[in-house]
Image: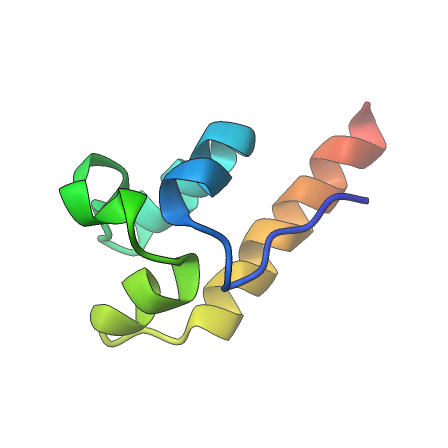
Length: 71
């Protein structure tokens, strides 16, 4: 199963797994439209907004796992 981690570049991760953008938006993070997203990791971007990257990355990976199970 493919997973994301907090060391992945935001833009690269979103391009590869578009669902990430929806999860980030739900937390009030507009990372996808931010110019910094091309230079920042998921962990850096999430933490910069005072949120716990581990919790959000875990949620993303749970969604990805369900999507992959469904084919």
